[in-house]
Image (cartoon, rainbow, N blue to C red; front, side):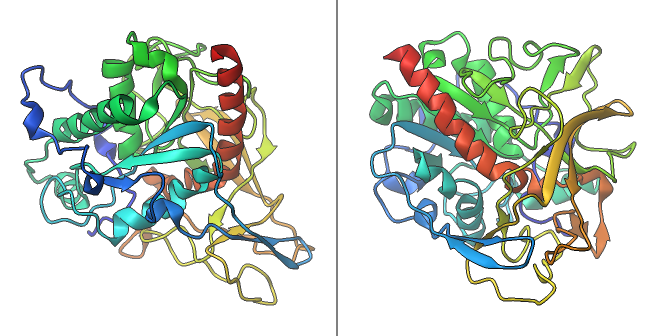
Length: 386
């Protein structure tokens, strides 16, 4: 079995041990060095890559939505990427490969239309280690190392770059699990807490008390329920509406009594089903999923890296068989020239792994909603703080 990028920290439920208080600061990378960052503002890197979109209407017509980064963004984004490293060691090195760059292009670069993006490299748990663990083998994986690295990068950012600006924390999968732990250990109850506009943590099991918006994994930050609300969290795990979490699911459930997995639909913060502003990869969900077929019945070519299909995808937070998750529906229409299917299921050895749901599409199905929400929450934060 060969695991693929973006299959994250997973089976371990995103649990991260506390950073050892006696750990030597020299054990972490030097984040004062430019090379220790995957993305930093003001340079050409993965977060300055082309983000143009082909918008496909129901009649099959194409139009191009050209992307433009903000000239003077008023807030910052701190992004931690998911499990992508193909390094052979249990924890990755600090040299970015194409896999780290590609995931930043698809998950972080679009936020440059609103914010300055800072994305540290870190010694993450690798796909190699996860494969060994999932096959029942021992691995010398060090999850505390990954958390310590990101925490050191966060502290460096605060010291050198923040200057009182608001920040949106953005992660996915392993990245979301690390941010969840960092918020609990290093942000809640500290002066940095006031800097947080919001935290977007899709693809991890964030525990909250049943029927409540705060408590559980995080003690201070509640779930976001209004687009003008700041200092809150958006978190969800994604499954197809017609393929709910199976009994062996990796997402949507937590073992703690009285706790459920948080589900916040960025397209409908107050609840209910809503069409999402999905921004999908033109060729599919990347390595680990089947390749996307034709977008339209006439097989017209798509020349941009990303695609929008307005009205085609809807999502709703649901609870079924003890699992809380974002249920995604493709609104198939025989009169519509667009595809009736989207790829994003995790595929290993030609077989779909239903316990992973649409993990590879956690961010794409609501990417446009998250970018828009970040701008609105930042505006509310700025009014309150200035």
